[in-house]
Image (cartoon, rainbow, N blue to C red):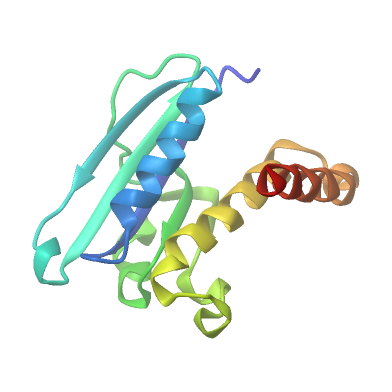
Length: 151
């Protein structure tokens, strides 16, 4: 297991499910036996304002906050929030923008947060492995998803 702390910021607008997405991510990390810290900024979220939620996980995490230039992954649910939150992303970090997934292909447009979590998982697997192992592990990942869905 890596000794590195992974920093993820989920950003969006009130009602888009940024908090729910970060709850799911934190739960997965916790179930994997990692130390998890989470912080949220709601702002004017009830009126469609900006929402960010920081999730940090690893063997030992001190603070729940992701500072500017520290996010390994930035998952953004609203186009208007991409440039607002981009400074949080570290050099070489991964931006997962809202237009990565075609909302028209979703069974419910409110599930964009979950679709982008799927993209996050795939990007995290790629970041953890050398390129020559990406294809085989993508297949393994899909098999695991299918097996879990069959239960």
